[in-house]
Image (cartoon, rainbow, N blue to C red; front, side, top):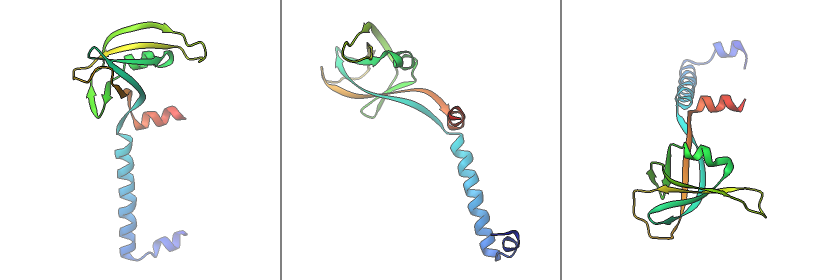
Length: 132
């Protein structure tokens, strides 16, 4: 499509084209202002009313500074109870720490739950800038 064809677009088509372009620009501006978090998914178990997680050493600091914890579609604040010493796995080259978090809800004892820890909340534009 060249410049002369753009000038000779019928009136109604021109308005539709303008509305589509405006809609895309507005959607882009809304998208870059949305805040998103990084997520670490893991499994843990309930022991004495607290959640026990085995977290790799590489994630332990970021998780302790996390925003919130999500278990079974319920959000909880991260309240640290205890951190164990480094647990060395001889066959696996990843070292772990056992982290115990307080949960203000009643779950059955020794039940395995899927836990998602949300941390590092940033705007989408900032995360895109980090990629490049």
